[in-house]
Length: 395
Image (cartoon, rainbow, N blue to C red; front, side):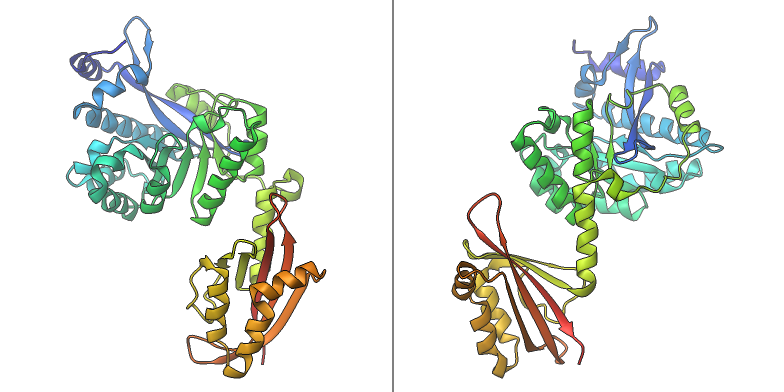
């Protein structure tokens, strides 16, 4: 049923709209971490009208802005009620119409300050559809919110066509995965590959991740293996009235227990730890596909030379790398790491190639550089992969 805007506005004025809270939990430990505020329309006879039945109509006019600010102020009041108990951050959904609202960040700050609330306790959720009509203003709007001390989440990621562009262009803190990405219960191989890829690039972009619509133990188990930050869904908790949510907060301490990563056995988390150890010695790590003549480089800190792009053609990488070497070492470098030479080495059973050369850094200093190539056979194809570890040696 579609309700007219006039009836929705009257319900707001009569106080029939209320805020429910759906808890969000740490994926690895199932400990309460935060919540999302969700609006409900409860009629005098007790009938509960879900947002899908009235929010689309409200979004056709500025009525949605009034609803959003109503929810935000209710969240502030709820957080104040948590003053003598553990305080958990709450996320609030905002319509794209707020992008054109004058001094939005200042108004949001003033509301939080009126209740004496730390700004990080409130998270702003915005969907990618907001960027479609307001692309020129969108990033500046997000930046103003973050500069005011609030966090920003991209909501419903994976439900639209422009998701990757949205993540690339928007300086957000959190990526919330739409529940449609879990529709096959994480038992379908293609679904798992897509999810793994999303979590991988989110981590690389230093974004927290939240999976919505988690309803089964199978989904939870897989999300743990992907190192998903938080989950929300019926498996752990449904949206609940304020008093029930406050009771839940009262029974949950904010301090998180330490977790033994080896006991949890999360491959993604263990891989992150492993990369941290590798970066302690090798500030430059390069992944190359010799078969396809491509490479991708990762740096944990500024390497002594920054002239090579982080991705491109492998042959170009070797030519560029050779140019940074001292003249007497250039031929040896190209001979040792040419693609043809490495492919031949692999066919001959060699599994490691090591070379020390002299490299001139961007600062003009000459340093000894050790490059070690390790051959890896891809489990997904016949491609020959090389992982290169590079480090400067002491004089």
